[in-house]
Structure formats: structure tokens, C-alpha cells
Image 1 (cartoon, rainbow, N blue to C red):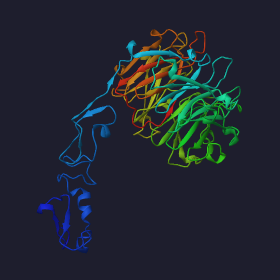
Image 2 (cartoon, rainbow, N blue to C red; image 1 turned 135 degrees about the vertical axis):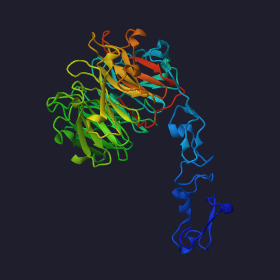
Image 3 (spheres, rainbow, N blue to C red; image 1 turned 180 degrees about the vertical axis):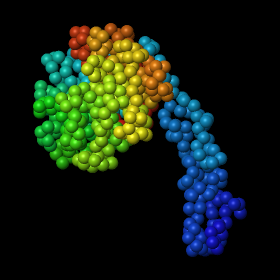
Image 4 (cartoon, one colour; image 1 turned 90 degrees about the horizontal axis):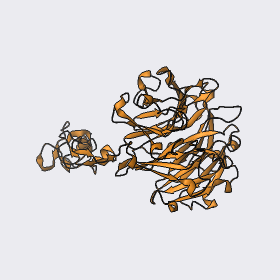
Length: 503
């Protein structure tokens, strides 16, 4: 009751049932005394009546349509229940996913894309659109920078040439070649421009709802029309609306920090749909990023590598997507080398596991294996939010990595060149259910033991079940097309928060 008003609950009980009436003529205002009947239940007064109300996760058998998967994510099964306090009880939920041993050779398979097209080799990065995996063309030595995109249909057999097709983007625009990384926005696949004989800004875009091998399915846009310094990018990020091109080296005269952003709600070929911002103007040394970035649901992170100001460095740059793109205050910076002097020279910030952002080690003055991790629940500029782990403690050859991927539980770090003596195939894997700083949470496997030429990869792609290592240069004798594929788990499922960005 409230004042002179009396709430009469269904069945005359003291708890609200599916209906609640008032001793008055006004069922919404308790006779004009200011108590709204619907608020009585929605403010948590009705737990135990068997009806889920606004303030409750559940009530007895009323789970609001939820189950173990919707509450805990893909890879769970069992019976979700409701506690006496009207909170979800997940004690009856168990993992349904069976994960493979990364060191099991039987879980690895190989396919040489060059058997489909002799020029299908020398890729850097890939994209998955929900069905197809795209391998991003960079340099195949025939004679050099090229635009031959290779696509694999995941509904086909991996070893069947018929499941593989190619398309040359230079047939649409002669300068559309030499890409580094790609992005998928839910419909379109974007290939990120880097170098086509000169640092350039020609983005190629494919409409995944149209025929792959038709020129009309493709379009290009030169971002230098928006700003002359917007060229020489290294990977991309998608935040649900905007596509970000990560600045690396634009030849004007060298490493740069001019991020380009495309609004996917605008026309692709209109300057007004694009914007650029030079983060180096906010923080000296915030330039020369390598191998993309990562989005955590709010922030976009850019992975530091090398620039003339700082050399090989650990200056992570972060953009708050809730702020204005062109406002200095939307950008923040943290030098992870303050946590570990060797935490610098990364090649990829391509991994987010739902809480932590991981930066992939490549070269810090020597090929290294120092992974840096940021806890997104902590303050960005506090040392306590950061941690590092040197994967060479697990395998001395697990260094010089390029790119990473996440399968819902495990993180895979892609092998490229470890200097021991060169191009290698040693994949490093971290179990996110284990302690980051414990060797037991990590494993390594040399895929060149399955195929001697399977080495020198740049970037990876996950399709819900399989993780693909993107072939670039294996030194045997050079650019190659040997895709390595690992069967990660059954049944298939994409991680929560998947946003279509890969390097």
C-alpha cells in the first residue's frame, strides 16, 4: 500500500501475479495517489510470482526466452535455471564445444591456391563474409604487386579446385593492386591500399551480393581525393558503421599517422563519405602503424611498429568511437614499453577476446615474441591494466609473428619470420581460460612439419570452425600460395562480438 491506496494482488496474495488491480477506478494511478501498478512489479516487488518482470532476469520457469547459449555465448549447452532471487542460474550449463589439439597434425590441411591460378600467391591478410574466405593480394613476384583476389567457398571441399575462384581487381582499375588487409561490413568486402609501385590510396570494394567475377560487382575509390597524404595504409577496422584504414607509410616522406575513415551509410565514391585525421598532430610518434587494428565494442586500437620519431616502439593509439573523429580529445595514447621495455614493434593488434586486446609481436630491434595484452576493464593509461608474455619461453622459434585470430576460446598467432634462420611455420596458441603469464596456457606447433613449404604466413582468417593461415613468402624459393587450415572445434560458432575485420 501507499498512503490511502491499497494494492490488491491476484488471488488475494501478498505478491503480484500476472495481474494487479487497485481498490479504485484508475488501474494506472492507484486512485490518484501516485503509485503506478506496473511499477510495483517492475521495481522488483514480484520475484517469485512466476512472471519475469522488468527488474528480473527471470522468474521460476519464465526465462524470458533465454537459454545457456544466449546467456553464456556460443559453445554452451544444458539447462538454464532461475534462482530464488530471480537471477540466472547457469550451474546446469556445460561447454558443448570440443576444441582440437593444435599440435595434432591430423587437424591441419593444406591447399596450394597457385594450382588454381599460377599467380595466386603472395597474399597479406584475409576476410570472411559468412560464407567465403578472401585472400588479399599484395606481391606475387609475377612480376610484382598484383590484384588477383582468391576466394574459397567454405561450403565446398577445401582440396577441391572447384571451390576456389580468382578475380583481378586491376581489370576494374589498373592501380587497384598491392593491398594489405581487408574488412567486411556485412555486405561489402574492402581491400586496403598500400603500395602498387608507389604508396597509394585506391580502395577496392566488392559487393558480396553480386557475382564475384563480374567487373560490375566491384568499385574503387582513391582516398587521396580527400587528402593527398591518405595513402600507404596497412590493414583496416570496422566498428559497425565506419571502416578505418590504418596509416603506415605514405612516402611523404615516410611513416605517417593519417587515419582514413569511411561512413558505410554514405556513397562509396563520394568525398563527403570519407574523412581523415592525423593522430601524429596530437601525439608525436603516433604514426607508422602496422598490420591493422582492433575494435573492442567502443574503442579502436592502432598497433605500433616503427617511425623515425621513436624507432621500434610501443605507443598504442586508441580512438573513442563515441567521440568526434576530428577532435583531439577522442584520441588517447599509451606506451606499453613502460610495462616491458621489449614490448614494441608489433605487427597486428588483431585480437580481442571479449575482454582483452592483444598486440602481436614481430620485431623490436630483433625478431621477438613479447605479446602485450590490455584489460579493457582497466584504465588505458595505467600500467596495471597491461601485461606481457614472451612466447619464446614456450618455443624459442615462436617470434616474428604477423597477425592473430580468435576462435571463441583460443588465440592463434600467425608465423612469418623468426630469423632462425628465416621464414617459419611455428603457430603459437593461447588458451584464454588460462593464466596469461603461465607457460601451461600456451602451446606451439610447427605446421611446416605437415608440409615443408607451409611457412612465411601473413595474417589469418577464422570462419567459425577453421582458422586459415594466409600465405605470403616461404623462401622456397619465394612467394607462395600454400594455405594452411586448422580444424579448431566442433560444432562451429563465431565468437561473440565478431565485427568482420581481419588481418
